[in-house]
Image: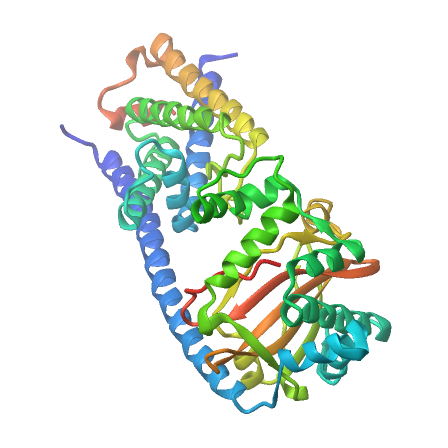
Length: 164
Length: 303
């Protein structure tokens, strides 16, 4: 496979992860109170936070997701955004793993929340596998760009897009 | 850091999309919150109107029915006197049930009113539920989801174990909650005018949810359906496991019987019995009970 084709595939893979993040953000934005409840129930030390704090936290997560997601789609500061996305997926996976120990886990709200807020162990396992897959894609794109094409991956983002 | 013109465009796009979604989420959340406040305030007004409207009905004290039952006519006679009131209600038959099914709703609701409110004896109530084929919900549902274990510990300072018979914990909580009712929540009679009774049937489709109930008159909808209500705790279930039916995407039939209750403080508020049965027919069971209220301070009705 030519380097050009591989580069296009890498760019598309990154963009698809970005689209997924945007979708996740929009689905959460439509149900902020429910997502605030998810944060309260799943994130350590968030149990006693006030409703307003939880809502701001929920909106902050939505903002970061859409910002990172749209940046990945548009290849804006790709290297940094890939790192940010990987960090988010790792953090989300950590929270999901804690939910695995719960007898009656609630919906993680990763890609929208079930109407009653309840989830299942199968949903969590699927979420962990999905996150691992997305991390693998982003790591692969990063490694590819570092090893091959992006040995010249510019620090000035304006040049980078020409290769995509 | 110097950005090219193309990078500036992308920055504007990224920020534009992100801020739009953030703004939308803030707007949706705040409008939902203020909308919820408005709806609650509107429901409060509807509740007060409903309570005022209920004052106009003739009410028969439970005591009068009880004495009929205790004297010579027996339980059936007393239940029949309630049936004779409920069967005069206007029926909103949205599920398209046949006459025997409607009669069956009225019969089961009348028996429930008799055993739960008129006789008000937990042992007789349990016996009636078990005799008609209902059974206690499973322990996990009752103890955890319905918070029976939590309440038991809070009220009695004792931990409920799996060895405690459900009939015992039911009876104990039944009596204790009753002691918390005060005059505001102690029912003493019910409305017997046809307009003070409501029977509605509907179909629950797991995919699209429950049919909307419409009484065909905005004022009636307001007085019956748009009030503030609080649910009470159900200990029994019939043959239809609606959780299982939902999971299997099976339709089931639901019915609501609304009555006007007079309380010891002379206030009158509507009370709703939620019945359900399989989509293919069978026996109805009373699975839900909710009451119109504005304060929600008294003990629960364990049923």
